[in-house]
Image 1 (cartoon, rainbow, N blue to C red):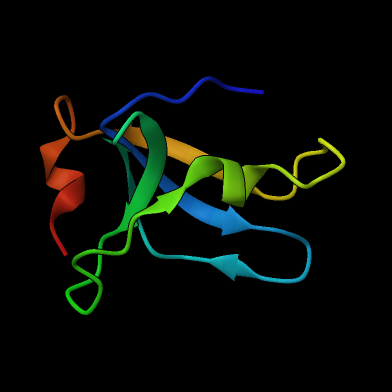
Image 2 (cartoon, one colour):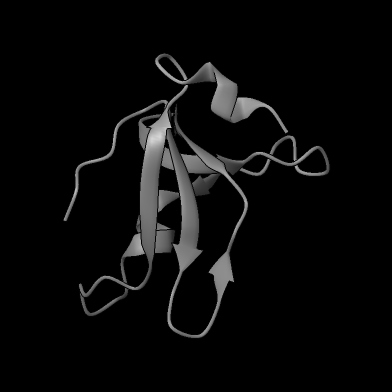
Length: 79
């Protein structure tokens, strides 16, 4: 129910079955918003948000928490 913007940092993306504890940054790529996981192994891992948060029936599939953004909270990018 919360709006997210480019540069926001998300955590705890998941569902009842699983949760990804890594941090993710919201990015825009070719007119599509998605996330990049903050992990050295996955430098180019852009995943469109509609694949993460929407199911085919239109219901929300996953949830996540915005903990800040890269502009106001750069310390959150530290590993």
